[in-house]
Length: 554
Image 1 (cartoon, one colour):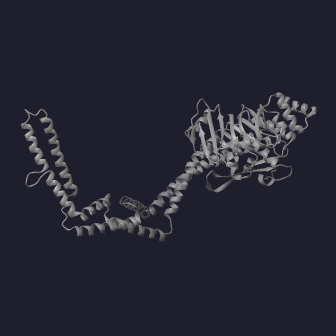
Image 2 (image 1 turned 90 degrees about the vertical axis):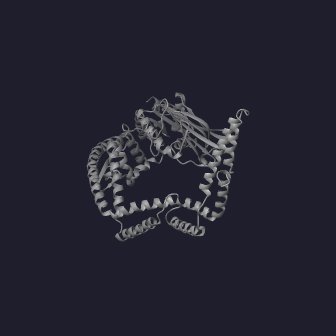
Image 3 (image 1 turned 90 degrees about the horizontal axis):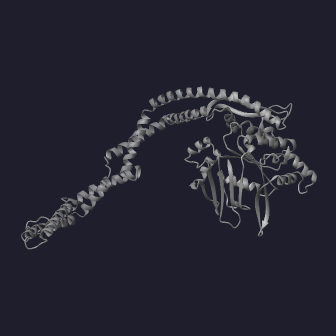
C-alpha cells in the first residue's frame, strides 16, 4: 500500500508529507485548496508527463517521493521481472523535476528511465481520475475488463505467443510472394553484385597491406640504400668490421683480461647482448625495409589499379574490405532465399496451418470462459448498479465472433446498457450521463474487486454529478473495495467522507506573502466540522453539526 507521500515544491505545496492508512482514506477540502495537486503529484510517480509549470515559482527543483509498504509476494514477483527488488517488503519511488520540466526517477535510490515508471507503478497503484470513466466509452477496452473478470491470463499468454509467431510467418510469406518481376529483378541484381565482389577476390586486411607496399614502391631506392647500410654497419659486411663483429672481438679480449679486470664477465655479457641486438635490428630492418623491387613504376601502377578497384567496391558495398565481404555473404543468403522462395512458402504455409489450428483450439477455450464470465459479470454489474440507485438498469456483455485472429483472440466484446425502463440496450457512449458513467465504472471496479491485484486504488472525485442517497451508496462501494485494496478518494461528498477510516483535510493559507497548501489528519471533532462544512458551506449551524455527527456514527 501507499504509506507515505512526500511533496516538495510542486505548485503551491512547499513541503508536505501525507501518511496514509490501510482501508478507506479520504481527502476533502475547498475548491482550489490543492487536492488536484496531490493527485497530480501521485501521477508524476506513475510516469505522467511533467512540465516546468508544475514547479513551485522561484524554485529550481521539485521532488515527489512515495513509500510503498507491505508489498505482497505476488507484486514482488511481478516487480522482480523488471529487476526491481524490495527491501523489507518496502519500495521507495521518487521523481525529480528541474526548471526545464525534465528530471530523473529513482527506485530505492537507483536512477531509472522515467518511461520505466509507466511499466512498474501500475503494479503498485491505479489512479481513477475525473476523466478515467471515459475509458469505458472506448469499446476496445471492454474485452480487457472482461478478461480480468474471466481469469484467462494463462490462455491469453499462450495465445499471444502463437499470434506473434503467426504474424511473423505471414510477414515472411508476404515478403516472399512479392511481384514476380520485382523478385526476378532482385535476383539478377544480387547475382551481379555477388559476381562483382567475387571476381575481385578480396582478402581481409588487403587494403592496408597494399598501402604499405605502395609506400615501399614509392621509396624503393631510398629504403634499399639505407637498409643495406644498416645491415652492413650492424651485422655483416665484406670487410668484417661491423658493430656486431667488433663487439664479438671485444668480448674475446675481455675474457682474456678476466684475471685482471673483476667485472670482465659482466662487461662480456653486456657486449654479447649488444651483439644479439645488432643482429636483431639488422634482420628486422632488412625484412621490413629491404626490397628487391626491380620495376617500382610498374608495381605502383598495379597497386593503384587494385586500390581503385577496392575504392569502387567500397562506394557500392561498404566502408571497408571486411564490410564488402560481409555484403557478399548477406547477398548470397538473400539470393538463396529468393531462389528457394516457392519451397519456403510451402513450408511456411504448412507451419502457419499448424499454428492456426492451435490458435483456433485455444480461442475456443478462451471464448467459452469469456461467455461464462460475461453471464456472471452481467449479473454482478446489474446488482451493483441497482445498489447505486440505477434501479431500472439492464447491463449486457455482447460478444461477436471475428472473422480474423486479433491480438486478443477472435471475440469482439462490448458492454451495452439500458439505464431506464423501456429503453433498449445501447452502447455506453450513446446513453450514459456523467453520473451514470461514474457509477458504471465503480460498479465494474467493485465487481472486479476480488480479481484486483493493484494494492492501492485512487479515486479522484468519482462522485461528480452524484448526490444524496446515491453518494452514500457510492461510499459503501468504495469502503467495500477497501477490504481487498487500499482506497484513497478525493471527494466533495459528505456521505462518502463520513465512511472513511482516515480523513485528511486539504487547506491553503498565506505565509510570508505566499500561498501554501497543507494537509492535516482529522480527529473525530475535526471530521465533524469538515463534514458539516461540506453539508452547509461556509455557515456551520447546530443542524449541520448534528447531521455530520449522525453521518459519521451511522
